[in-house]
Image (cartoon, rainbow, N blue to C red):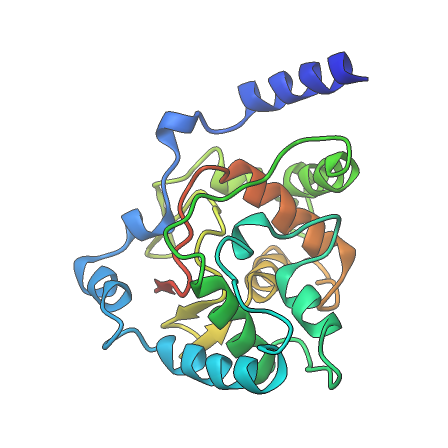
Amino acid sequence: MRIALAILAFLLLTAEIPLAERRSGYEFMGRETRAMQDDDTTNPALLWVLDGEALFKSNCSSCHADLKGVAARYPKAGVSLDQKINHALKSKFAYESRELLALTAYVAKQSKGMPIEMEWNEANRPFLERGRATFFRRQGQLNLACAQCHDDNWGKQLAGSVIPQAHPTGYPIYRLEWQGLGSVQRRFRNCLIGVRAEPYAYGAPEYVELEMYLMWRARGMKLETPAVRP
């Protein structure tokens, strides 16, 4: 089994973007947007982080103290960070609600600057394999796969924007297009709608598995939450 996993990992490594060529979406942004992300006094996502801090203190602090490194290890076993947070709450928040986004952003910010940890091991393997299949599967009326944009054409222009490599290093992120904070699942839905495919419901296993695979691709890269993007 270990030999088979090692062979699979080798094949995946040869297919993905080489480690030395990995780039955060931050590197494709203009100077003004970078400056907005870098300065907590101008980063609009900090409004959500402050709300998240208040929610954490009133709902979570009695059980959880040290959050450093937590976000760098999620998703885990098919559960995303926002799902884990919601499971621990007595009163559940809806996906993409301000409360859940705020709590997730606050928790993730405690790991800002830390390297992403995601191993291709026996426990993670089935989720990562399904996430990888989704990434390479052609979908929608346009018959496009995630890999065709983010592996084959990263750095090029699409509708006036630079195509990034799809490393989820800064979620939840503040997108200028949205004028608000959003999860990686919201971004996935945008892409599916863009290729004219039927999007999954929020919280669907397909989204969590895809996020898990993308975090594996981004292993070793630093978390930027809360990031800002165009």
